[in-house]
Image (cartoon, rainbow, N blue to C red; front, side, top):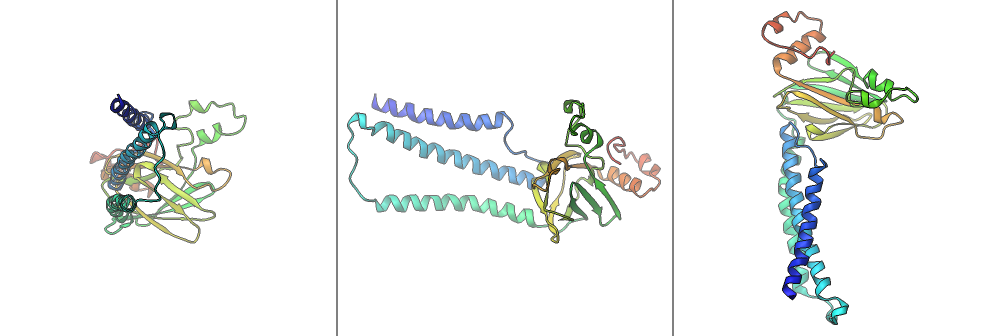
Length: 283
């Protein structure tokens, strides 16, 4: 009976923790896997650390609840009389150190990957302003401002009479998205013109602060064409919640057609080659 009670307590603790983790995934609270090499590396590292923490939690809380159950006062258990155990202290010092080392090795590799901008193929400068983003393609002589789209801006106004639920991608759409080519390593040079902002697109796997007078570097290489949305992640003033980020990743041929359009060049050659662009979305 005693052993059965121990098993029940341990299983209850294990089930509770596993249900908590499952619930987190079920409601979509886990981080996205993303569409870049770094975002996938960060996701895999996150999952490794998460499951290490789950195992530690099961062992620690399991031992704690079993101890509480078996040595409760109502059973007449007398507390042990000792000051310390050298073996126990050495054990619970060495084991956490080993766990931290195991966690630090892949974490360091991912951090190095995140900071390595060598081998980039193009530069884009991003400047944050209250409350918009300026994008400058340093290799293409293209520059434009990206702001909250007019439909969202109208709906957010006090007493606008517009139901935000009727607006597609409410507060997450812009008038001029950032367009980038797929399968291209891009270096971002991120700064600000007034206060501290933070440029963040979850599917890219990172965010960078935009600080006046300082240029931060970051890079990405998107493998899948698509539209990826983010926001300013640093409280930067009263309209902080109204400066979204939209990145459109296009295959190289479509990206080159978009570049030609921005420069006012004839794009008939691109169309003949099969390149298409989202005219309704990209200016």
